[in-house]
Length: 138
Image (cartoon, rainbow, N blue to C red):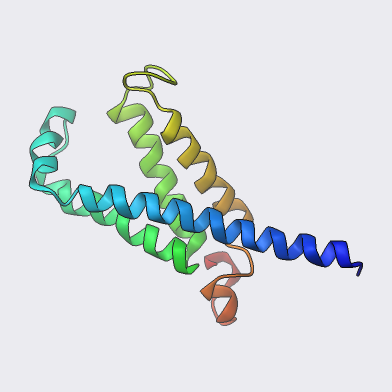
């Protein structure tokens, strides 16, 4: 294998680690804000019962953490993709790409989560270090 091929593979793994980390941090921060009691008061305006506050917050925080460490990355990305589709269509109503109620950030997060779901976490991940985890769960 040529030196440039080796550098390319290492760079790909670093890029996937960076992508996982960036998405993970964003979802952890957004999920932590949802533990605020004000979020529970906001949920009925969207037709969602206030009791869903904790499950919604955990559905962002836990996959965010799993993405950063690189365990169950495909499953976590799939869950976050579902959350982003809900945010785009249910919460924001897919009204516009930019501006008030724009979905540009949601689309970027959805696309990034789909990339990880399809391509996997890369070789710089805990699931890669623990070879006993089935490949479909990486």
